Length: 136
Ligand SMILES: [Zn+2]
Ligand SMILES: [Zn+2]
Image 1: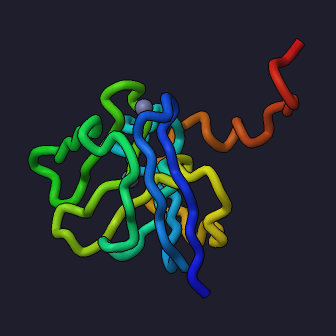
Image 2: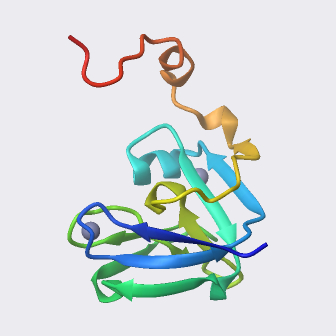
């Protein structure tokens, strides 16, 4: 069944709607994704290139294709730095950073990839205390 999910960047100037169903959702722990997200992993949904309709701010997005890499790219809002959807370098699929989406993509992560590259603090981080907001 077709679903539509809205997405936007942190500042709200970039917005679009993506159309599912989505088939692939991976969490990537490679060292490049750590750099691009500033965190332990990137949560990426892969779908068909034609599955996106841009509403606002596409001209504010900037694409970076890592030299010497075959596939790695980053695409972000130049106003706020949030990751936004982009086409894979071979044009075969649309890559959607899951955190860009404002609604439920109705798919959950299927694989943790490049697991051996996860940061040294990741496993202990899962055991840390949890708080609903800031700790006291
Ligand atoms: Zn933005
Ligand atoms: Zn990665």
